Structures are given as C-alpha cells and as structure tokens.
Amino acid sequence: MEFSPKSTNSQAKFCALEIKKVDKKNNYQTLEITLHTGRKHQIRSILSYLGCPVIGDKKYGSKIEVKDKIYLLAYKILFVDLPSPLAYLNGKVFALEEGLED
Image (cartoon, rainbow, N blue to C red; front, side):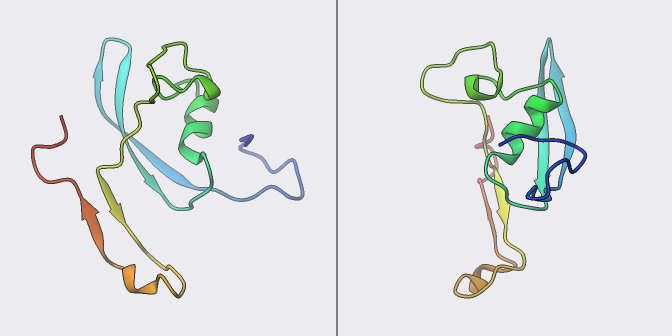
C-alpha cells in the first residue's frame, strides 16, 4: 500500500483516521488512533509516511527490530455501519479491562 495525501491514481481509495498524541517519552510516542475507514495497513502506512513508523515494523520503515512483533495494539474496538451479516455488531464496544493497558 502506498499513501499519498493527494489522489494521484484513478484507482486510489480514500482513507481517513484521527491521530492524538497521548504520551511522549524520549523519542517514543503513544498515540490514540481512531479509524474512520478500514484500509489494509492503513495505520502502518500513514504513520510511516509521517515519519514515525510503528516500533518493530520493518516493512514500513522502523529501524528498531523487535523479534516477531510490532508495537501496535488495539485497546478498544467500536463497530459502526457494518453491513449484513455483521450488522448485529453495530454499536457494540469491545475493550480491554481497566488496568490491562500496561
């Protein structure tokens, strides 16, 4: 996937997300990202484009190697506007319990 803020390709697909900085320690940031579209690798490619790839994500430019993982975690998922047969999930929230974030 290639990301560009301008549509340069007639087959390009729109994607949207919000990024909020939650914490910063040394050269690392904790971000809260809200997806408005669900494109494959959307978070990874956009963060790479912005110059802050996910830690351990060598495919998208991380210079830090972490064995067999990247530091990307979903702590809450809310489904909206899913079509059938998944429509029963609309409005449901799945979240980590308090205290499991660390």
